[in-house]
Length: 175
Image (tube, rainbow, N blue to C red; front, side, top):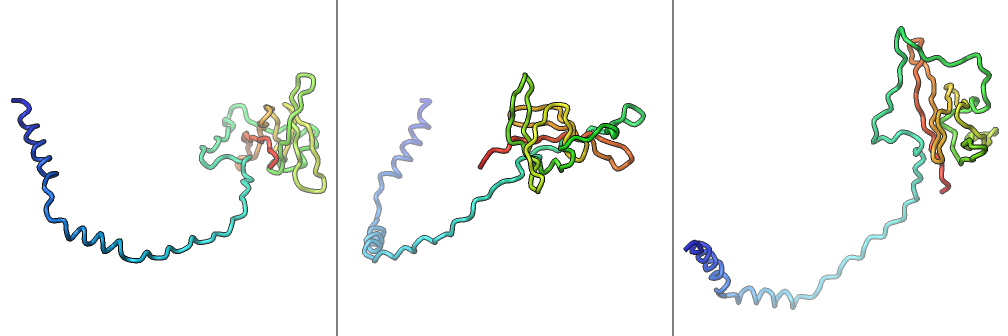
């Protein structure tokens, strides 16, 4: 008794499948369509190859990541200042944005990164390790790994003060 509605529904559905009706007009249309000559298919368009694109901003911050917060000095507390009395190192004569990490060397349990100073007549490859300075913004190397260098720069905050700004230089792989 519980299956009566289900049986009734099945009977209605199956009765719709059984009726053939008059399908002669449909069969005539199919035959007419088969007799028509086939149309010519248009050839595919020819595309000229595009030159390959080389992404050169791999050392910059990804546009899909949040910006690194600048570590501002606390007013009235310990402030950040560059040591202007220390002698400048060779890599401080070059812009850090032009520097490229080209490799690493391990020597006496110290990891050294090899830095290409970038384009120009004074181009050279220089070794750096933790504690060395590089770039024009008092950048101090704080970490060296086989794939990247972490540098903490000290830049002006625009209000007669200084802030620390982290920067990462990643290993440049040959193309």
